Image 1 (cartoon, one colour):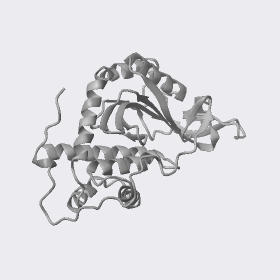
Image 2: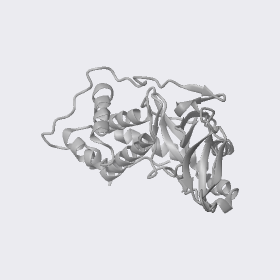
Image 3: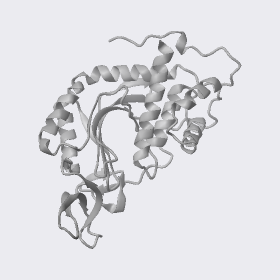
Image 4: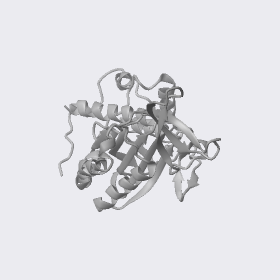
Length: 312
């Protein structure tokens, strides 16, 4: 296996920039506030809205005009015992919308993981009533430094309000703090819109074929660990921070302020510390939303692309 090249791009800049000081408090890898989890159907759910199980019945129902009775489209409805009708409306879709029940999405992810031959465990389910996310951790690990190991995961996303397309991808995982790192730039991904009702069964084969990259997971893990080790060699300076800040325009100043608070109080003064600060904020927010996963991807990809530019 080849190692990542080093060069002047990884050396500290010669300038009068202020180097951010070592954090006054010790580095704390574990969450400051662990998420309270709920056990539903024998699975730990990290986020559930209105206490609904991710595996309730979800149906695609035809809708008709009140006056003419003509078919006007379809509604996605979720079984909800607290509703008067027993179902809750979550969105309107077209006739060719492909309904992917959460239970099937999870089952396919488990099948892919099982066929990889790699040891794994389910680690997270996010469900807010319209968006479903499932994470599997593979147990193969690489060491960044003593006591700090990283690995790969399989993340699957889907939604019923068209806010997320179906998405199945590899991702990075730092085990000491359980931080997930999402990046479409550096990890293999299969993604498609829910617009293939005539391919109700073939979508499973499409995903499984696209994720044959799991065969190369050990090499991908080595490369991922090498990139993180390279980030750890780059000190965070005032000039570096000013260079990085414009890379995340879609992440609001308030959220970036939370990342900086985490970084200054609990992380080492390197780009690796900055990456861990951001992914900790996005992966462990007490009241997670779909935006946290989008911010995670923007932040992780931005820092890894910055590293690539430093090495060129």
